[in-house]
Length: 155
Image 1 (cartoon, rainbow, N blue to C red):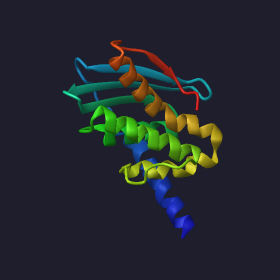
Image 2: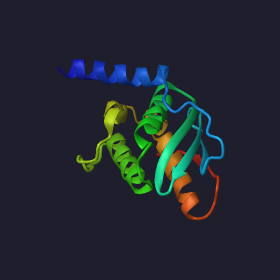
Image 3: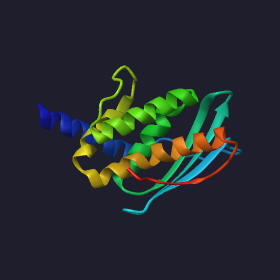
Image 4: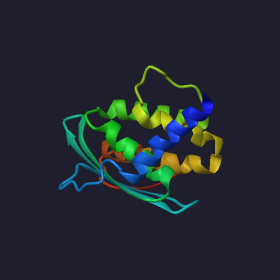
């Protein structure tokens, strides 16, 4: 049973890697940020178009490993239509999931649960967190009145 679950999760990750969501251009984004993982060289650029306090659309451009790209794709898929606070809560769940910590299981994380196995490979956790760290840093910068900032995953 566990092997079938591992296979299913692997398939979900590879689907997001091969066909990443959010790979589009957003003219005049409200939020822009770039992230870099110095450990393995993953890079990401995130652009977000807002509608009031809701995320209307997300663009992610990721150059990196399968885990980093899949996680960025999952972020683009789940964040659209969510409020800033909802995105921050989801990002907190992702971080807790990847670090093997307790989290609110009532928060819908969609395909992100497929990243659960990454926690078995601590060096890959930063890859999976890059998109989420970059997004939260961008939101925090916007709330502080800044437009763009470069993020680096620190685990």
